[in-house]
Image (cartoon, rainbow, N blue to C red):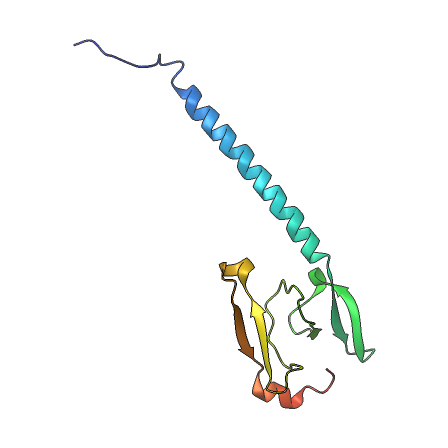
Length: 123
């Protein structure tokens, strides 16, 4: 029985190469857009407590290290894991939106750490 092929052996890899090239270009563009967005967020300013000066100073988010105390304000983007030690709310509650992480638009309620709230005095 004769062998039937839709393409010659020399031409068969061309569609696969084209699809892989287009996918690679698309992925590179998405990575570049993500890189630019990350750079913009990392260069944004926040208020970090400076123990030497005993006050909050403006610093970039990219320079935040574990253990730093950060002062947050309403509607501020937080590009890091934060443990809430104090809140301006008398009951010690704050509300966060995690739409960038999980796509949910509803506000999530978080409560301050009770033991830490007794010790935080430089808010």
